[in-house]
Structures are given as structure tokens and as C-alpha cells.
Image (cartoon, rainbow, N blue to C red; front, side, top):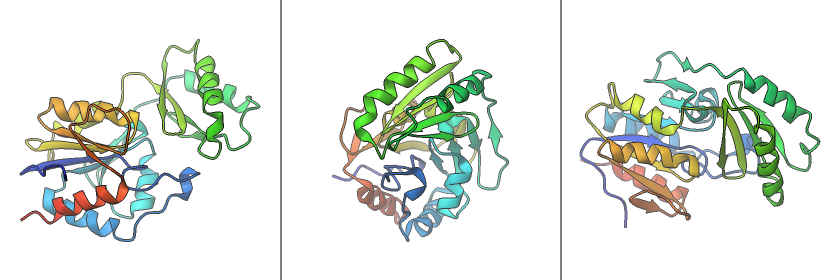
Length: 240
């Protein structure tokens, strides 16, 4: 059964695994031809109350969607309150530089394990080598063990390090505090563990979360896959 559509929704959408299928490498994802057009309709329907909330950088989101939207990148370390607004940045902890050097010196960055340097955060992907999941997770935990300013986020085939205190939930709360989101019902759609904070914030603010795919979640509703997300968003866009 399709999740309900609130009368005045504010949409918060994860990117990889939610709007697009996860690919073996982050830059290999494929954006459906109709997605930018769907976003145009959603922006019109919601009065602009739509934001992509992702672990990716906002510049990456822009390049894939080819349409300006409100966005929070790097799990909230970057945020653009409205389309066309200036991008705000949370400065990275000094310990990021130390971790960068440690990861670059690790001989495990082979066989499909790669580091993505986001500036304010560092992600180690093992999408091309899922059998090395335990190795990557154990190594990253060891590398940050004496770096208390950093926090690890374990996502789908990625482990990311960033400063503490900022997540997708804080991003949702910040968006909902101002126009065009304020006064609307927040709906957070995501597929990963990192999206649970966003769903929790949406619930606390009177809305709900939608989990994409399998796995435990606090979400009130669930959709099976990316095409089902597009179908739900189309229903939102076409609401009278």
C-alpha cells in the first residue's frame, strides 16, 4: 500500500538507494530520464519544500540532477536552504587531516576499496569489494580510536568519518525552521542507516519516515525499491 500524502508535505529525500540505484562506484550511478522533470513538478506542488539530504556533496547532487533544489550534503556538513541560496559549510575538525593521512597510508586501499575525500569528511567505499566489509569497518574503527572529534557512519558499503553533532536529523530540523518548509508535514524517504536520524526528526516534527527496501527502521511506512519511490513522488506531484 502506498504511503499517505500529507495535505502540505515537506519532502526530504536521500539520494543513493532512494532516488537512484546504488552503483559499484559513486560516480557510476544512473539518473532516470524523468527525474529532473518530476522534481520540477514536486517543487511546484510543494511550493519549493523539497530537499535532497545526502552523504554526497551538494555539488555532486547538482551535477546529477541538473536542477537546483534545497540540499544538505555530507550528512549535513553542507546545506543550501533554498534553490539558489548560498551554500553554508560546517568547518571540519582538525583531526580530519590526520585521518586522511592514515587512510592514504593504509595498504588496504586496493581490490575495490577506495577513499572519497569530501574535504570536511572522508568516506571509504567497498562497493566493488563487498567481501571486505568487516576488514574496512574494523580498520576505520582502529584509525579513529584516538581521534575523539570524529564520528563514524556505517552506510551501505561505505564507512564515513565526520565531525560529531551534525547528521541528517539536524538538517531536517534546520530546514523546517524556515520557509518554505515551516508549517508543513515533513516526510523523510531513505534506504540507509544514516537516514534514520532524518526519519526520527520528521516524526518528532509531526511527520513520518518512509524506509526504502528491507532492514530494521523506525519508519512508519515502507517502499520496496527506487521505482516505488518514483511512483510515490509522482503521486505527490499529481495531487489535486
